Length: 240
Ligand code: GLP
Image (cartoon, rainbow, N blue to C red):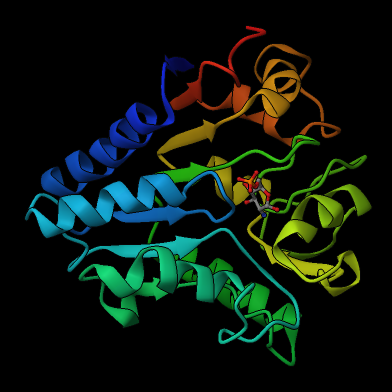
């Protein structure tokens, strides 16, 4: 693992955006795995700025998002489809038909998971951006006795719903289920870019990166991947 610590979130965001820009310069048709949550918004801001400066183009790229809530339509302001449009896609040159997110409104969710896995198999991810949940979840792969490899439906843990309640009117409004790429699909990415910010994540960063590899901390499985880049602000990295 290549662990880099930054003095400011600003520098971290710039570095991450630079990694995406570099990859896209070398391979304009790259496949990017993208993430949501509060962590990546600054990275997307920097990517938009680089796009405006002519330094980053998504015109020929393909993107896959990690996850989506079940039952929220793309127009819902807390759906991840809405988030991605607002924070990135509406401001860059990505082609709409090369943007993939799981459809949490699909009537047949199992078929939707299979469709997503098929698409992922056709366009392997070159770099997968990940945030980190307080309980060690990545995407929406929650701690459990076993983890699933492919795209699947998850029941969100109460802790996760509470953590995400800040974006909704109340915790009851946070969907109980989500569709997420599985751990196997995440680990298939050529490179993984794990980004963590804030003192409240310092414990889980230490556990995930230096603790035992266990399904009870899904991010700990990243220790098994050959090419992981971890970007931390100094608060998130303070226990390492
Ligand atoms: C959410 C998302 C994850 C994200 C994590 C952390 O529930 N499903 O993909 O990485 O929680 O979110 P944040 O960056 O807001 O702390």
